[in-house]
Length: 335
Length: 143
Image (cartoon, rainbow over all chains, first blue to last red; front, side):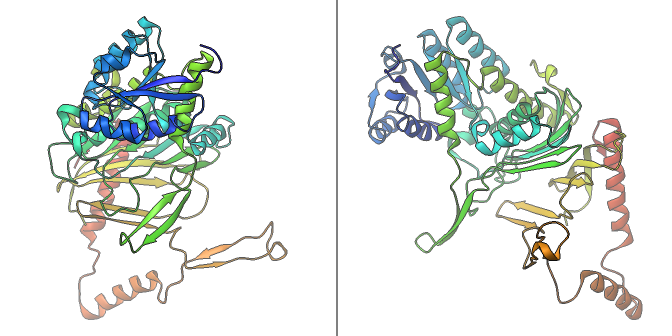
């Protein structure tokens, strides 16, 4: 690849709404361009092709036959494996939406195929690219709060509805959807691996057949303990989609993080609501840039498929724990 | 508020031997099905903090004492030891401690039972003991 040629990217499915954000990020980066999209929902595909001024291909296979370097994969969770393996076998680098897969087996198959085909596999964890998180991690690494003792993390949101609440397509509700973000940040902050998880999980918010609230308690191999609140517990009237909050307790101090803390309050008579408008840096954009840079420079991705799977394993252990009513080691669920 | 607790799981520093610091993260499952998460901390700088959130299926209530600050008195460095120190406060017409004592006196004078029953205080202590037991054993404790 010549230095002037932008990285050519294909978009595989817009089922996950983050795909729209990623596509608009690519359009903001001179080093990358969208070559086209494919979507098993043709109508959605046409809308997105128009919105992002690109071409809609009739099938994933046709998209993968184009001269593209990489794909961004955002279908329903259960289709991550199928599309990732297709893309890897066509020799394309992959950025896959989180959770990387709804099962350990799917995640492993994706990682192995990408390795076999010599393509990069990156998990979309934008929180890692938030300058707030980067600075917090730097403070931890510099020893500003001494040795970490405990971590409290939360990623609460509104119930997303759609396929997210159809377990046959998502593989899990709030616990799978949100645990992975915080579990990943905890691994990234500490450099530790999660050894076990205990969880109380329920469907108390919407009273349907999918999990929408819970609290996880996890232990790291260093002995540090942490809790994660991944609930879809923000009401529809909440002024923003959700939050990412963390408290890191150390021997010499503590760090509190509110990733949405850079916000303004907006009160509008047009919508008759108040809302929080975030003005902080766009983590999605920084993440897409990182993915593109890794392709341009031939370097490793900053968040690997293995990172994605490690986070999924925490959520899966939590589901098992709530059935057994005891802490479950990640090794017990095949991780 | 949510009735009796069914099960408690807790992680904490209680048995860690770290001097002058304690920190615990507790999950309580109530018989009603409600899930509660409690953070208890003697491990963080920055003064007294109380946060409460109740998430329901039709709405959310949240409170943070560090946001409920109707009065801040700021002083320049000359009047403070090191640097200007703003002192936040949340004055109320009648102190909650006064209200508590007044209620106790009223109960004695009028022969009424106090709003906080000793059984409830016992239940709170039992919950705390269950949490400590869970920290010690690493297992959930059924109540």
